[in-house]
Length: 330
Image 1 (cartoon, helix red, strand yellow):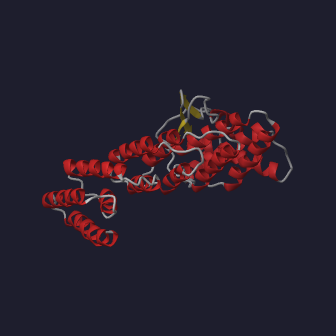
Image 2 (cartoon, helix red, strand yellow; image 1 turned 90 degrees about the horizontal axis):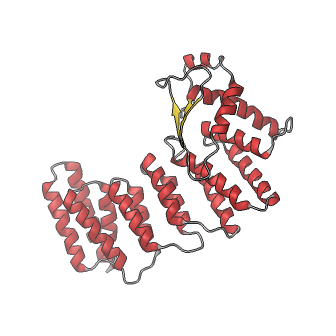
Image 3 (cartoon, one colour; image 1 turned 90 degrees about the vertical axis):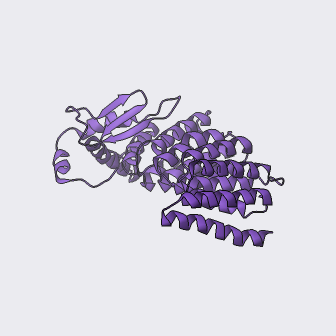
């Protein structure tokens, strides 16, 4: 959500009840125990009656932009008062306050760090840390996967999630890597294509202790890449998985290579993302001469049907690059 306010919005801010907006929105931001919220900021095209700040249908949450600005003003006052000790917030009040702030501004580092401190205190004082961490993950994941343009690739929010998983690992709590990829990374990758922070987080997930089911994970990522074949970040992560598993036989790599070639051949794909993936894999020692010949044949077939000079340049560059570096690897 843009933080810029036009003149009309600035005038409207003088009306209404900011405290009422804060109370309603902060209560609505508590995620359900069995899933994530789907949050959207409503602009002027969505007419809300006076005093109506939120539209909610199950897990779907529509929040008036004007109301959120009003709520943010109250939340910022609450947090500043708490930090300079002119007032005091309970743990639940602090979490409610910082939730509103992070919805308005996902890069508010003070709010994120305040949540870290209070979560650590709650874990120390509580006998059930898993519930505290899981609740916080549901909140953060709701922001990361909702249709909120700035949130899906917020380095502050992804860093906060990484901190949560590191905390979970230190407490011997299991992390379902594949489930996190599907529910969070894949969705954030769809909301914001070529999402650098989301796919960096995916690499972090793979590095967590506890092991990764590489065959299932590779299959899931391959399926995602096939549905988003212009997203180079997904293809890069797929190649990362193939490298990480250190399969000495190269069976998985050759299988993926063949399936991607079939996709490219059948759809006559010419985008650079998929051809960078293919050329990199084709240049490795894991692809034999027979499959390399298939790569050349598919490249020639797609090149023949392509009329766009830019597309032809991508195809020719892939073959030239692969030819150079395949010689060096052999």
